[in-house]
Image 1 (tube, rainbow, N blue to C red):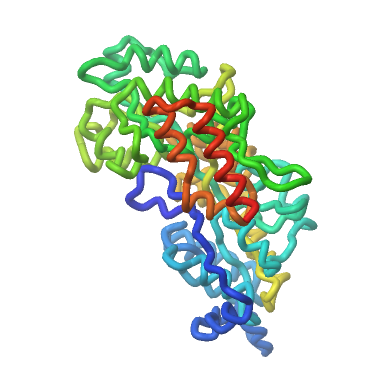
Image 2 (image 1 turned 120 degrees about the horizontal axis):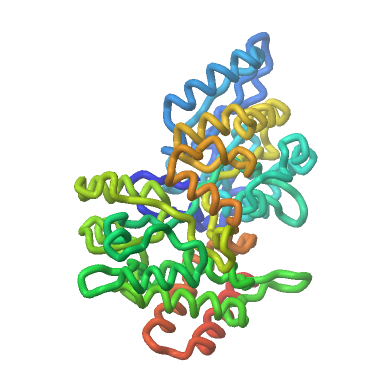
Amino acid sequence: MTNWSGLIEVTVKIRIIAGLSALAAAAALTSCSSGSSSDEGDGPQKITVWIMKDSVTDDFLARFTKAFEKDHPQLDLDIQIQEWNGIGEKVTAALASNDAPDVIEVGNTQVAQYSASGGVKDLSDKVEELKGSDWLPGLAEPGKIDGKQYGIPWYAANRVVIYHKDHFAKAGVKEPPKTRDEWIEVTEKLNSDKVQGIYLPGQNWYTLAGFVWEDGGDLAVHTQGPWKGSLDTPEALRGMEFYKKLQALGKGPKDSDEAEPPQAEVFAKGDVAQVIAVPGGAKIIEQANPELAGKLGFFPVPGNTAGKPGATFTGGSDLIVPEASAHQDAAYEVIEALAGDTWQSDMAKTMSYVPNRTSLASVIQDNEGTAAMAAAAAEGRATPNSPQWAAVEAANPIKEYMTAVLTGQDMAKAAKKASESITKTLNS
């Protein structure tokens, strides 16, 4: 899961996992035991679950724990809240140890990194009973490595368009656009000397990824050979061309991302008509400028076809079971409950998240922002499913590529350079 607190944008939970050897990882864990042991005895088995800070509320965890233990009197849940800072090293150490927790929440794009260690249990045989055919692709696909399902989707969040209703009304725009072409037309109407049609920073590469996917391209591809960066394909170039056209209809900086300056603060000044963010960003905007309360609306990022949202990056969390878990069957029972209808519905309402299955989207239809997010989640995607993708993000040639294009450099040459950099990193 992403720690959404205080952020307008999804903060994707990719951490660069230090190159720990199994010996070093195990040694690191001895100073920080998970507390999960076989604890043979007459009392209930203790099942240790690592949940990331701010993923869900304390009240949700208390409700879940009480209900789960009532239904499973032989089990005693020990839920331990983990900090994001340093979590990659801690999880790596746990997976290499003989004293791992039983269930761990991980970012959906982290599953490939962790499964590469060989310390994550293959849960492919559980997919059918967990209704995996209905899972959101942006959660399910990152959890599946080499045909095996290691991560079980828990919840999702993705970007939508937050818009200023007053600016739309003054421009004569009666309803949100349904296609990309309409989106450009509407944004041109909104854009003026006093109002930015859209605030879109030049390095918002997760948004670019959605545009690339919508046009049939990808950031990198992997068939039977090595990984290959693919920003220089015709399809991916069309996605960048659209980004350039849309970005020009505002005053977003060409050489920074949504965090610098914080785009919530920019929108809160009142002269921006649209911004691309997670729905929770609206609360931050309203906190910065209470006069905007009730004036913000939401719609999915438009795609090429009316009636179908555009492709978007899906962030969120999966649940994994370490091979070193002493209670793997019980660990699965925890996951089965968290991923099931009752607690998916409860969590979606409590946290305004998108449930892990498309058929549960109706649970959040009364929340405009979350409903828009759920509609987009059905077309959600995730970053390339490689253990080395975190290293690509660390150097991030995609951001450099975007700035190069937006400042007038040759798009094809810049795309080829970025693709070569991605290829080298993914195959290192």
